[in-house]
Length: 423
Ligand SMILES: *Cc1c(COP(=O)(O)O)cnc(C)c1O
Image (cartoon, rainbow, N blue to C red; front, side, top):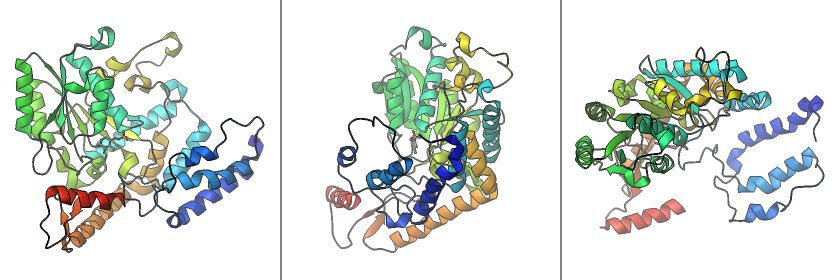
């Protein structure tokens, strides 16, 4: 067991290790080379009876654990999404761990609640979101979208579902390219995965607004209740940007909740040249984006905005005796803004990152990433054996191998690209 008195001494080897790891990260294979069960097999079945020395534990971390780590900070990591963990966010996470605060209500840490509120204000201004919107930090976009779906469910059922259960005629609409977290949330919210209506997409894989409207009309004549529409800014498959404006006018016409999933692409809203992505935002009800994807903040950190915080709070608040406080109503008690009671102090790392980079620095970094990808697009276009699959956007380029001079069926093309992807 370590003695707190020696924190400085005991932390040195860890700080040194982190420094060396980040400097020499390129020497590791990006993807862990272990086989299923390899790591588990090296860890004893039972916890140790007697405490062990911290240097032994650290040594074992390098020997036993590290080979089973895939290095997300590696410059050659190109899977899923970039998950940039900046020095600022690492340092702030250390302080967060030291504070060990539970940010469930204002009184359990007033600074955590008020800094969170202010960070939401910063993003609201920087993104150009409506002034009346309010925000909260969640762990993931999956949680935020579930929160949106549950709130929309309550609104659509006159706030009866929390108490009486969910009727079986609610409908959720999104495109066929929407992230799987929506279908998962539909199940968890009790609406049912079969009530997720996947709307057709156009050649750029964006939702077709007229197809959405016909689906809604069909449902209305068969006694279904439209509950929520989800549009995506930056789909996971091809970074398609659905039209917020076109869908918002349909949602307004039929009185349906509109949720915007900008988990990945949201960071680009810091750039004036990408603000068109949220044209029509005044008619949006909720919005999610992940600083833990493309805003230099280590996992986890998701920002969730709502047009009307009262509806969110009415859906999630519950007030047992032990959570009653004298400040209720004057402050934000964020436990009422989502699923969790206990919450991490995530605003601190955002504050570190946003202040250290500054808006200018963030914009420059994001623009730099976009330029790098435009450069990459030129390489792809200049290579006779490669072709673009969708129009490149942001820092995203969707391409495939298509050997020149060979006529290949789509099936054969898919096969060779699958082999490429897996190797
Ligand atoms: C990454 C992503 C999600 C899921 O994010 P988590 O924070 O891992 O839950 C949802 N939607 C889109 C568009 C995403 O890019």
